[in-house]
Amino acid sequence: MTTSHYDLHCHSSYSDGLLAPDDVVARAAARGVRVLALTDHDELAGLEGAAVAAERHGLEFITGVEVSVSWGGHTLHVVGLRIDRCASGLNAGLARIRATRDTRAERISEGLQAVGIEGALEGARRHATNPELVSRTHFARFLVERGCAKDMQAVFRRYLTAGNPGYVQHAWATLDEAVGWIVGAGGIAVLAHPGRYRMENWQRDELLVAFKAAGGLAVEVVTGSHTPAQYVSWGKAAVRHGLLASCGSDFHGPGESYRDLGELPPLPAGCTPVWTAF
Ligand code: AMP
Ligand code: MN
Ligand code: MN
Ligand code: MN
Image (tube, rainbow, N blue to C red; front, side, top):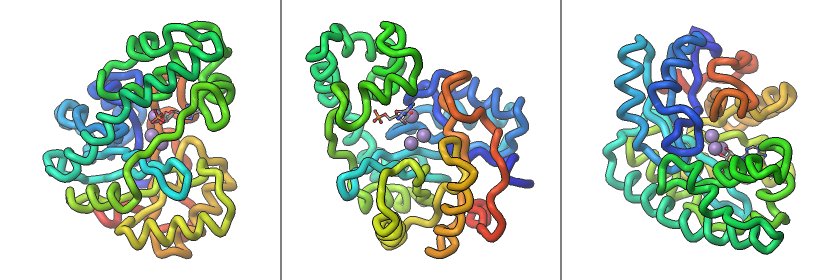
């Protein structure tokens, strides 16, 4: 099997994806994926249904999750692969994160109200199919529907990123906690889409050192939001730090993501794929 057969990062309607787990699996199978991980944000509830659907479609299913982390003033995402979805530490940790999303959503809504956008909390909740998981994506869908910006990218740029009215600082899990929960659940911790974090080069290296020291094993080298130049630079960074390389589309829904399921170029030469540790 090659990279194009693996998709180790995507979302269902249990977090901020548009499709139910069954439909994510069916779409992945139809697009040639043979090994799929569902990695919903801070939530494991979609895994059971996805596993059943994967069996039906003859696809190898990897249990996954994407944990929200605060580190050095940045928000990071850590993907866990091959986790035991019943592990108590992981479940308790994720429940704690989810429990903070409600007050955060209220604060996001207040920020939007301050610039004249009424009803954002109700609007975001209407788009959220998991009441415990109201995310910025749901606010973005509401804002696009309201005509506040032309598409998701524009909405994030204008309203939902640092310095804009619908952005609030938030304390997610620490890096050590997130990696600890994943490793404690028997899983492999992967630093998600590192190219998205706005950091200087020295801080990138510091992050990889801290991530590895916490028990992290791999870096997402090929992901929907990386450029071809970033595949190469993060591939080299992974090798330099003795980390494995992962790949995933980060698919959220048809027409809404950089890449569709299974639409991934190969890992750069020299990388050791994360699946060698499966
Ligand atoms: P939250 O966990 O509530 O902060 O929401 C984060 C989610 O927002 C990410 O997982 C992405 O799905 C989405 N997101 C963040 N930035 C962007 C962007 N620039 N364009 C589209 N979606 C984004
Ligand atoms: Mn998302
Ligand atoms: Mn992410
Ligand atoms: Mn993701």
